[in-house]
Length: 363
Image 1 (cartoon, one colour):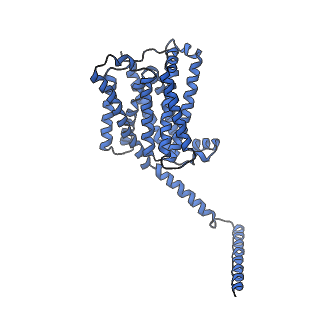
Image 2 (image 1 turned 120 degrees about the vertical axis):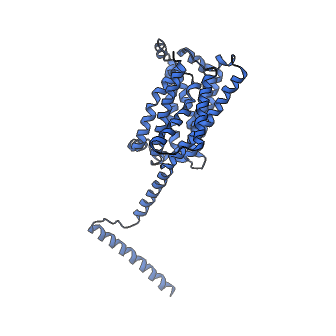
Image 3 (image 1 turned 90 degrees about the vertical axis):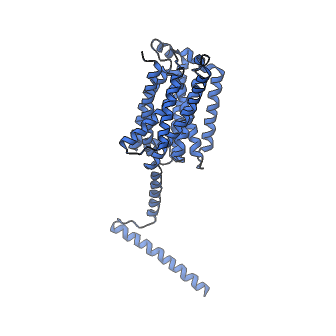
C-alpha cells in the first residue's frame, strides 16, 4: 500500500511544477505594469486583469493550490516543502524541451543535488504524521515555541515591508522577497492547521471549531501580503536576487515549522542512529543549496525572456510620450495646424520684441 507521504510528495511535485511555470508568466506580466504603489487599488486590479500573460500565470498558480493543500493535508510539512526543488527541475526540463533553453552544468549539478536530497530525507526514517484532528492542531499552535515562532516571523515581515515602502534603494527588492517568502510560509503553516484536520470522519469537528476559521483567515491574510510583496519585489529588484531569496525563505521556514510547530521529527529522532541524524540534517542544507541554484535559473530565464527588457521598453515608451507632448503632431487637421502655426508665430514675435527691447536698452 502506498503511504500518505509518497502521495503527498507526488502531489507536491505537481503543485510546485505548476507554480513555477506560472510564476515565470506572472513575472513577465508584472514587469510591464505601472508601479503598484503609484496606483489606486482599483487601478491595480484593472492593470493586472488586462495583462493576459500575467492572468495565465496567475491561473496556473491558483490551480496548483489544490494539489498542494491535499499534499499538506495527508503528508508532513517537512516532507512536502522540499518538493519545491523538484518543481524547479520540471521547469528547467520544460524550458529545455519546449522553449529550447540550454541546461548548464551548474543546473545539472543542482538537479542531482535536489533529487538525491529529497530521496534521502524520505528514505532515512520517513516521517508519518498520522490522522490529526483539529484538536491536535489547536494544541500545536498553543505551544510556547509555536507562538514565539509565528510572532517573531510576523514582526520581521512587518519591519521588512515598512522599511521598503515607497523607497527605491538597491536592496529593496531582496528585502521584499524575504518578506514575501516568509509570508508564503506562514500562510502555508496556517493552511496546514486548517486543512490538515480534513480527514474522513473529522471534518465535522473541524467545521464546528472556531479556531479552524481563524486559521483560514490568517492563511488568506498571509497569502495576500505575500502576493503583494512579491509583485513589489519584482518591480523594485532584479529577478536574479528576488527569486532565490523568496524561495529559500519559504522553504526554510516551512521545514523549520514542520519540525518545531508540528513536531514532525519527534517520533523518529529518538530512534535514529547518529549517522541517520547527520544525513537527515545534511539533506536540508543540500535542498536549500539545490533550490537556490535552480531558482537562479528561473531568474535568469525571466531576464533573458524580457523581464528587464520590458522595463527598459516601458521607460523608453514613457520618454517618447513625454517628448511627443512638446513636438508638433503629424496628423493634425488643417484647422488645428493653422492654430498651432499662429501660436508659434505669436510666440516668436514676442521673443523678437523682447530681444529688440533688450538691445535698445543697452544702446
